[in-house]
Image 1 (cartoon, one colour):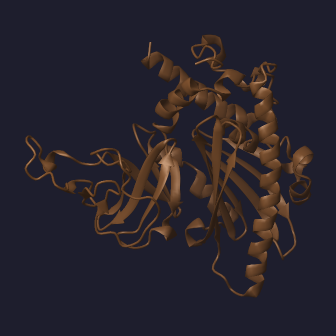
Image 2 (image 1 turned 135 degrees about the horizontal axis):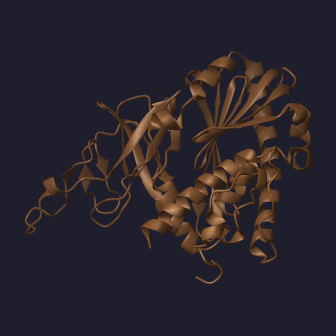
Image 3 (image 1 turned 90 degrees about the vertical axis):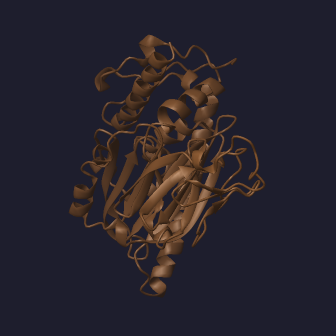
Length: 366
């Protein structure tokens, strides 16, 4: 496709040491060819956040979302959590279009084919006498589903071992006294943004821009003490936090990124999950779920309102700069620049994981 460039650029996809690394070339931030490659090699092969366990408490409770561009459904059954492609095997209709409660079966919204909660086809409307058709031969493609600290993740394809994916996170949360499994779902928000999904994540992964883009956030964080760590499949940005008791109080802010598109923003008594999904025409959707400790009174309500108002301010600042950066990436002017080894090590970590997935894709499609 015009404008995508050469996606088999061997030199640009070679592993780069942090000390001398450059950013990912602009060609990888646009075009259908890139999006198709990423659906196969990135979103089709890695764990992604789905929802909090408090949203699937009882048998038959389910939610719907996407792994990249793949529609999925995750449901709590008598045998535990199960996940499937939300794509009927008849003619690709949806089994569900929004979250629900107490389902006994999954029924396609298009032609009424129904599936048991184990994914097997139960009935196919008006197909009883069709030649060479046996419902026993049909079942929904299944996903791997795991729960961690009250967070539910799903994966298609052949993802890394889940234990490796989450390694070290529970221990770090314990040090800070955070118990994510005790938090309760409060609200879901989403924003559609005119930038590639990676542009948004690149921005998230460095505090380098905070003093320049987020004046109010910069007052709460100690930029001089801002630390970023990288691990096999995640990175962590953390800083001392100082705010009034009418907002977060004092403590520690933890910002986890879990490859490829999940963020956990953790402050005292509060979790904000942040998931980035690619959209057609080089846009992305950023989904936020807010979780809080159990309400104890009116003061908690006021703090939640302030938190969401403050989050809106920060998000608006991020949206504006990401859309500006995307215009620069699309301009034809940008040549990949050097990264700051101290401030952009998590961004480098993310882009190295992307390069590895791109190399694997190119090798498989020679």
